[in-house]
Image (tube, rainbow, N blue to C red; front, side, top):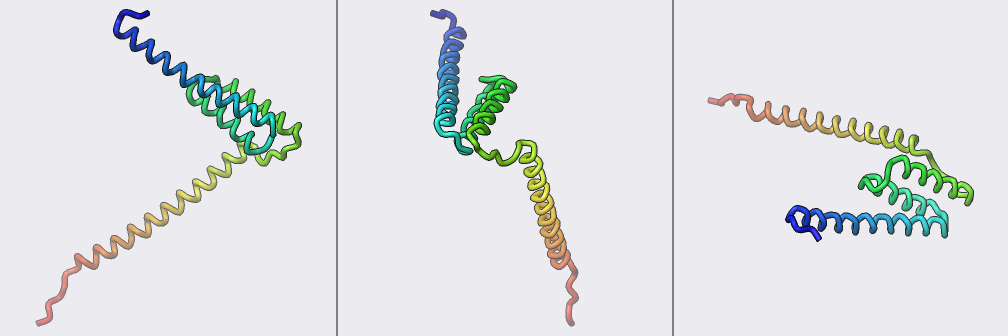
Length: 131
């Protein structure tokens, strides 16, 4: 047992982290088991998502997750699933969509700005007194 206060705290933190990591690993195993039991696009996506979460939390290395996801794709292909698009294609489409959205936002902002300028010039224009 630790005696020093900081060592006690470190032990508590390690215990919590271990607990959290075990939960993530169980989620990965459950998703993998569900995918192998019935390979569908939904279960494939869930399993891939769990691997990505593990990488994000530094529980698994990026290449390990990539290798395991590739294995999932092989299983899916062997099961006869039609894999829709590759990740690179999806990223390109997402980039196009966000670029279009950014242009739309920019145009809308410009319209609002011009309307505000017109309204400001109308308010500040000097009024002629009729005498």
